[in-house]
Length: 487
Image (cartoon, helix red, strand yellow):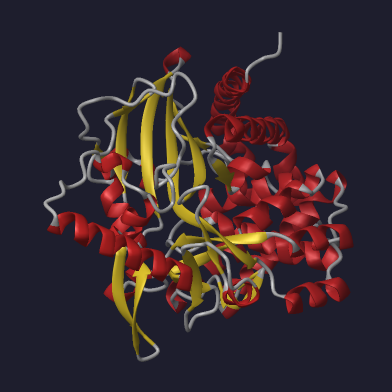
């Protein structure tokens, strides 16, 4: 009998939990002996490469288990995408996931970066598509802002006409004594879009845009108290946060607690290509990693836009940012194992030694990997692992020194733009310390750490009376119902 997708995902997830619990025991043993290891004397002729090889040798068994966990997480995500309709982005989908382990080895965190589409039938057209397809029937369009990669989501000409017809019909019904909406949860999409609209000034004109902030606030009005029987806590980090974060706890064997954290990211598909032709042409002549067939695949990829403002100002609560998550997942998934294993190690170094002062995130490590692959290709050997880790650390140090790390797919955007000079200098000092003496990585256990943002006290308890249980196929993960577009 063929195993159901949900059963397959649960089976892989169970195996992954077992590996993590075994991993925690290995890490605890390493942590107990780490002081002696880190204080071991280096010979006068010892180099930083030799020291890094020593460090990686100590962690070899742990690294192999982390790699197996990352592979399993990617398999689970692929199965769940079919089952639940969720698109897993980031490390959950590309095979570079690094679990978080508590200092007391009694809890671990599994995090999912999930990107939701507004609605399967809803797609925003770009100006080129709209000009070449004057008879299209898409309600929305993307409108570029002054900042590269950021957009407004506004009504298309077709959408404005349908909106006008809808409002006239509603006004006529109300004039005749028509009742208000009986089932608010089943409102047609166009009515919901009208409710999420707001007026802004753009290039001297007043236009109506779809406000991601309004949508997020609406979704948080009645959050669930539990999912699959486990209590739920929710958080939106700030007014401009692109995600609502959901936290659940599950008690496992041997006194371990599994904390599940899911970022629910608001997004919608567009007809707009992710990449500019100029970027494709430049990569053809410079990259040693992206082959022609992969570049062609990337060229044909249409992007999504996700809710994200570029600065904390009221007027920017209506901004959407282009998402390269699909491209990144495609690129990382195409890599052989060794570069992905090196990325997992770099994430561990960042989380354990470079998380304070706040500024460097795992995405910066992935960006450094992409730029490194462009220069030296992706045919990495295990025997060169120490050199490759040191090479990437040197690239991080250089980026911090200049406070410049261009987004790989959009070089006009600097991923370190918001980092102040003091933070960059302190993080740069720490990176140089690791490069000069990699034995510092043996203090404690390199891969043992948890994100403070995942502490439960940062979340609010759900308020809905009725719990949500996904024993069967979950409902479509969408910000809008699957009703007819125009009601």
